[in-house]
Length: 114
Image (cartoon, rainbow, N blue to C red; front, top):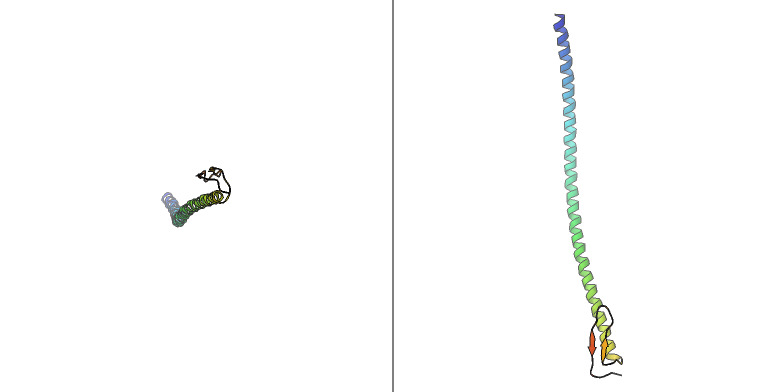
């Protein structure tokens, strides 16, 4: 009988420890699930921020290319206007070559203007 009583006490002790371990594991699982939910929300937020940053970068890249093109067109137009006014109002030989990088135009005239 004593042997059975000891075994019952040991089994009850094991049962109590097992229940405590199960409760601890359950708490750890709940914490892990909570962290997973927080990380999922953070991932979604960061994904949205990344998409916004990509869209902003694409827009800035498009605008930069547009402004560079407009600046290049303006530079060429200014150069051509400068070259042409020099051609019209200054004495030049019969063949006038613009040395500007943006223009490289050749102006021909039938007479030298003074």
